[in-house]
Length: 173
Image (cartoon, rainbow, N blue to C red; front, side):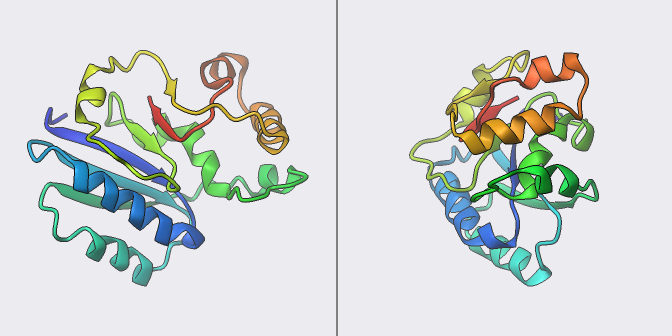
């Protein structure tokens, strides 16, 4: 992998295009120009028009690249078991299968799209050795706990232990 490349993973649906654009733009405003920030957007149906809006939003930054990865994996059955899905979408489950979706990366930064970056992330990315998961925010909501319980039942115990008790804001994996 190119040592100047920093892969950023975002998972969201069409309803979150605007906050995603804001998050991506704020990251690039703080970005170190010596690195290429590669946004990998994993989705299940963001329209081409909305994809083009996100690309247009970043065109003034030369050290970025945007890739849209259409995921055919459906988590609808798990999602429908949630009693109160609240503001969550099925796309949140894509974070659990990143190693199979993006095997080309040794480590990545995963971010929610309802964040604003106030500083560059390149030094944190390069200091992180990739042998563990680091979550910045831990959620204790009943909805997320229900979601994780249902989700964990679909993975083997070793994998569950790796992803146990995470909540994202920004996740290094």
